[in-house]
Amino acid sequence: MRALRTIIQLGKVEKLCYISTKLMDRDKKQVMIDLVAADVVSAIMEDTAFSVQEAMKAFYNSDVFDRLCDTETGLYRESGGYVYDLYKNWHISESAISMGETK
Image (cartoon, rainbow, N blue to C red; front, top):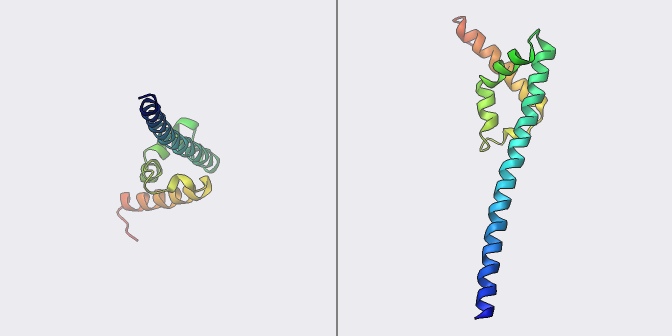
């Protein structure tokens, strides 16, 4: 009986470790997303006359930010510079569309 109880307890520990690892993975991904987003916002501020609030609003309202937050895309693993280049290309495309132009 004691051996069975020990096995059950070990099973609970393994399950808790698995859940904890999954939460840590999610937290690591969120930290990576936050760091990339901060890099992009800083780059927007450097290239424009935007305040931090304006740069955040511009990036957070973009399709690129939506894709960055979707961990299935893996975009959070890329550098801030790479994601900023995607943002600039997206922004240029959006501007052309809103002005009635197409590529």
